[in-house]
Image (cartoon, rainbow, N blue to C red; front, side, top):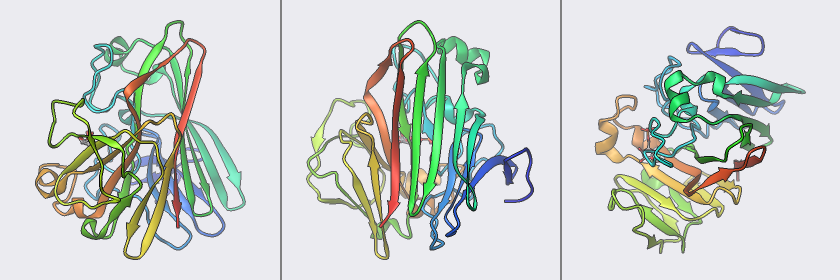
Length: 296
Ligand code: TA6
């Protein structure tokens, strides 16, 4: 982080960002590009999010790491024939700062906004809905909350999917375990890439990751990420009906230009999502959901 670039923002490797901080030392960094949280450090100095050292930070493409926002489409799962970029456009666009709440040590909440004014003509044509999207990031002791809110400002129902594509930092993926998904149905996108309707049931009380792992769990239940020296509790609103767990594994990671070869060893995505049944938001209606991360 270096000198301020615009009122209320800091410059992180060329990207305008908002810095939240608390007296005890907790801090979070949010890029205006994508309204993407890039870093969350708790008061003990521990970084909880993975940001690839090779992430593209030119404000043009998707940033590999932190908490990308996938909206209004998840992956390549087109809704109603409206073809959009993979994972939608929200992570590719510049968001406006709507509010910043001052706390005793600086700001501890920020709200960013996206409206159709930020869309290119091609995106507007592909997705001709009127909306106001807001992302609120709130920092409290040992906890980070990311909330997404959407208002349909148009006069036709608006369909969308959503994922908070959270990249959690881990010391070693081989010593990491994710608990809380036992009993949930899931689609294994590695084993059955063309068939999201192929549902299996999770039997493991704790997931361990060996190789590429890409599953959409039909679960909004809380999970716990356990590492030898630390644990993190994750929860999500009931409207976020799926939890996606993703790690590219060594082979796929080697082909990702914005990841170092060993990057997969230091991250696990645990995503709070709404995928299988997109939301249809009525004109004038407002929809809200979020994810909470808490150190244990
Ligand atoms: O959420 C998991 C996933 O959809 C994977 O299938 C994988 O493609 C990942 O997201 C990352 O996508 P990205 O476009 O950011 O490379």
